[in-house]
Amino acid sequence: MTGWHAPDHFVTRYADGSLPESDAWSLEKHLECCGTCAARVSRAVRGTAAGVVLAEVREAVLGDAREAVPGASHAAKAAPRALAAARKAHRARPWAPGSRPARILWAAGPAVRGAWLPAVLLVAVGAVALAHAGGLPDARPWLLALAPVLPVAGVALSYGPHADPLHEIAAATPSAGLRLVLTRTAAVLAVSLPLLTLAGALLPSSDAPGAAAWLLPGLALTLASLALAGHVGVRTATAVTGGGWLCAVLGPVLAAPGGRLTSHLSERLSSFLDGAPAQGGWAAAAVLCAAVLATRRPAHHFLEMR
Image (cartoon, rainbow, N blue to C red):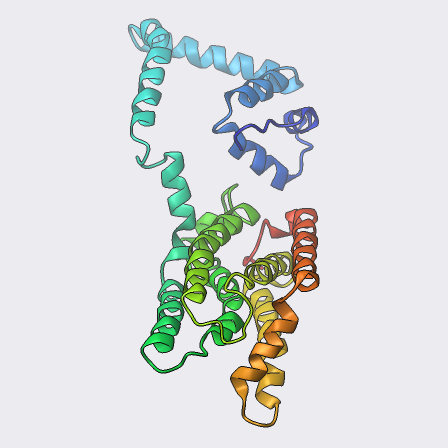
């Protein structure tokens, strides 16, 4: 949330208790790392009817502390200096527990472990090995047919109780839902996009589309899965989009007569991936799915909890 600040109406409605629960969670999470908004919320709360009560409670607690603990006033004055020193020490250890990099690594963890990562490596390395050492020079069309489905499968295997032993705990935090699934999706894409594209570039062309032709379809299918997940859940959404791609690409090829599977597959992939119209269509689909995902954001707060 760097560079973003809570709108005034968020602060006002949070102070009077009328902000929806999901938005209140997001605001509270933002206040952990934004002192400006925390001060604004504090001023707004003090301006409500509850502000008087909170001020009285605060004074009573501080008064009792000063009476009960000798030197409490001195400790209260020294507290800001100690807090500043603690923050400085925390910043000096960027990978300490609770730091931003550590939180990001924890959030992305299920996306880069388990069965999915070895499967991607096996597909990429296996395709290159078969093409150059296994006497199968026509491996690129098959890799391009499978590549758009692998990020979708990675999303399915990175979010939910089946993927994360701490899912119930994570799902109850303000960072759950769309924010967490987007973090894990980014981790999946960061691994699969360069690895599979590099593997495709190392394969003979075999009259198939270019090694990077699958990137926009892969991105569009991933975004479509996330947009659909708000309605039916992550696993069902990824099964629909990934299965739909495989049926559309491989179904007619496997049913075609003549036995020239690779040749038929190359022709099929060319119609899906080659040329500006095809790539423009996938780009438009990706933008549309991203827009649907943004408008349906509240539906993702409780993914895999229904």
